[in-house]
Amino acid sequence: MDKLIVNILITFAISLAFIGLIYFILNKAFIRKGIRTRFFINLFFGLFLFFIFVISFVVDYKGGNILGYYRHLVLIIVSFIYPFIILLYFIKRIKYTNIRIIRPKTNRNNNLFLYILFKYKEGYLLIRKKDLYRGYIYKIKKSFHDEALEEVFTKLSFDVMKKQYRGKINNKGKIYYCYLINVENIISGFEEINMYELVNLKVEDFDKQAILSIILKEDFNISI
Picture 1: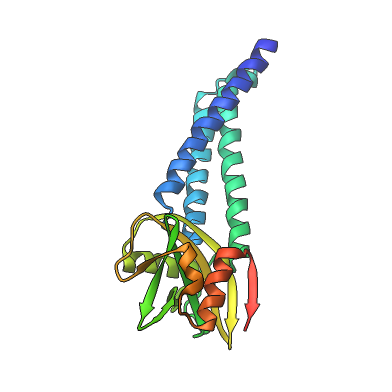
Picture 2: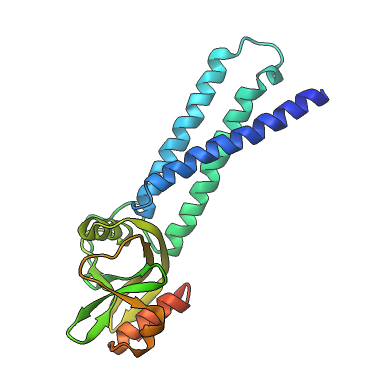
């Protein structure tokens, strides 16, 4: 019995590591996708794995002591645990970033925007218009802001290393969802600004508030 318990624990640890690696690769491959898209990818993939292992157990089971099929049972349990935990994480993120699971047909609020600050190495990428600098502003049209991010990634064509939702700003009725996104390369049309130069840049008051909030704060909700 002791040997069986040891074998079960070893199988459980190996299964956790193996299936965890699969989920890690899966989510890395779809890092540019929005939270809602990755939610459904993980959901369907988790259900797929779970049913594959259940079917495998049903086909192989010939009766007798069910613990004789502990490898099947461990895989079934682990294939359920991972998607359950990951989906809880995504649901929390979706609630945190105010994303809807089901996409609305139209965005009736014409005052929704993304405000994105791109981080490159030890500095930031900003847009310069005349003598003023600002982050990247993108108007949300028919989709919610997770899919609007995908539109930005496609439009600007860059590789995402990491993206973080930082908070939102209400500026005279216009809502800006603020993101800090790490990129691997300089984006065309942007200027690289050293973090120590930010203080001396010429920016509008709103942009200064947005940029500093994104850098220094988390989960902010600011009204101007």
